[in-house]
Image (cartoon, rainbow, N blue to C red; front, side, top):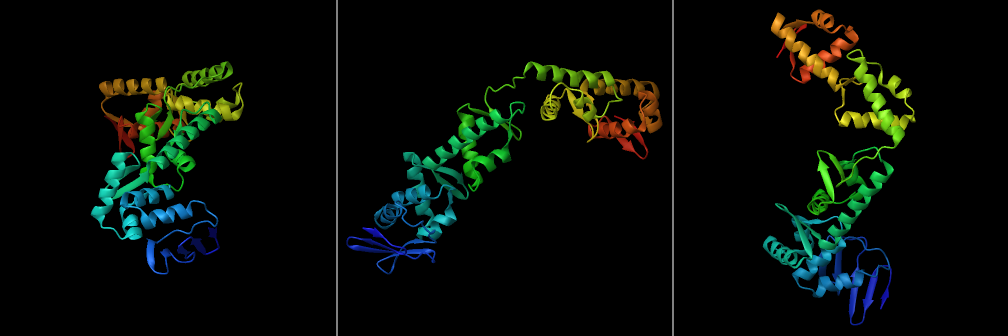
Length: 312
C-alpha cells in the first residue's frame, strides 16, 4: 500500500483523493463523501476512514464522520455530505446515541458530536478552569466566554454547553451568572492580603459619603498594585463596596445609611428633593451628590423629575 500526493493505491482498489475538489471518489466515479475536507498527506487515518465511507453501514459512517470533526456536525452538513434523507440521519444518530458512541447536542436543528470528542472537551474545560485558578488565586472564577475561547475555540457552541453541563452534573464546577469556578473552591488570602482587604473596607467605611479616590486608597496598601486591584474587585463582588461611578466607590453601610436618611427626610419634608437640599442633607459637594443621585435613580430609590428628585 502506498500514499502518493493525490492517489491512494490499495490492493484491488484505486482511491483518488481530489485534493483541490470537495469530493472524494473511488474507481473514477462513485462519490464517497460530498464536500470532503482535505486530508493531511501521510495521515494514517485516511484509509480506514475512506474504507468506512465505502463499506460501512449508516451508523458506522456517521460515527466516523463525527469522530473526524471535533467541532460537531449539524443535520444540514450530514445530509450534504452523505445524500441521506433527514429521517435516515436521525435514525442513525438515535441508534448511535443509544449505544453511547454519539451525543445529540440539539434536536432542532439536529446537532451531534462524537462521545469521545465531547469527553475531550470536558477534559479541556476541567484543565483550563484549574489553570485559571492557579494563575488567579484572588479571582473567584473565569468568565464563561474566556473559558470557551481557551478550551473550545472553533467548536460549536452546543458542544461547549454540553461539556459544561457534564461538568456541572458531575458536581465539578459551579456556574454563577457569567462566572465559572471549580466546585468547593474558596479564595484563600495570605495574611498580608487579608489585612490589606480589611484596610480597604475600613477606609471607605470611615469616609462615609465623601470617599477618597480609589487609587489613593490602594496606593497605601502593604501589597503591590496588581494584588491591591484584585482585592478591590473581591470587595466589589462581595458587595462590601459598591461602585457608583468609574471614579467613586462607597461602602455598603454608608449607602444603607443614606437610604435611611432619605426615608426620614420624606416623612418630615415630603417626597420632593432638590439637589441643593440633598447636598445640605448629606453634607457633601456636587462632586459626590450628582453621582450618588444617579445611583439612587438606578436603584429606584429616587426618580428624577426635572432638576429635582422624588423619593420613592
